[in-house]
Image (cartoon, rainbow, N blue to C red; front, side, top):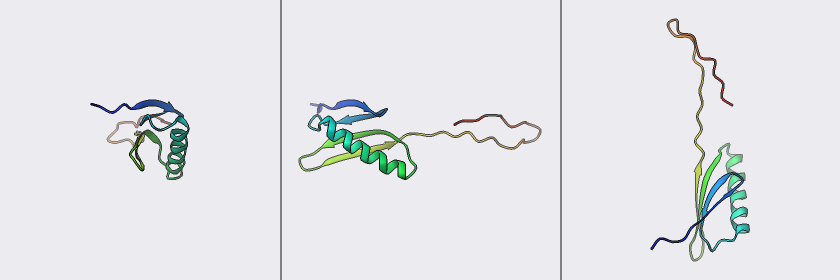
Length: 85
């Protein structure tokens, strides 16, 4: 039998959490994780919070990022004029 997991979105971050965790506990944990990740220059993609008997297991995943960098012209091919924010 699969354990019941709460799926919620807080600050545009998908969270899967044990039902024994209150919304306030989840929000507080998420804010702490997000603050640490922002300080490291990383973006939080999603979080799993699983409560065990004496602790909470936190699985945090980074948001994937894609960068397109224009290259200099190569053998007569003009570089693209692309810009991603």
